[in-house]
Image (cartoon, rainbow, N blue to C red; front, top):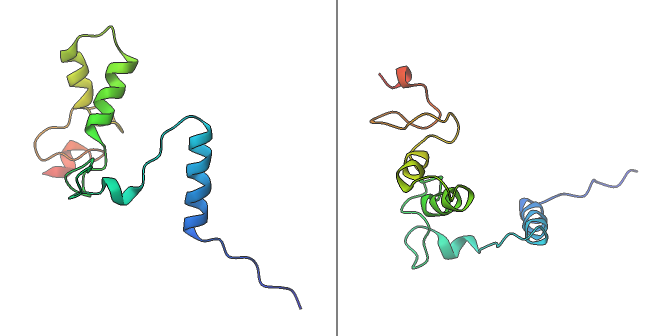
Length: 99
């Protein structure tokens, strides 16, 4: 009889991924500490996928020679398409799909 295959839990994959990222020099944080509603929250809602203050800091760090207004324009673009996000349009959804 063949033994049952070992089960891999999502938490095991997450723990290994976080360890690997730390080895690469990234700082990891405990998710519940930065969840919406907590003192150290990094987003107002779970619907906020992009952590805007982190993105703004990265844009400034990686592009120190461009003006602040250009950095602000970059911050307002949809990271998937590079297009400005306006009105009802949602990131990653074509503008004509929002009619």
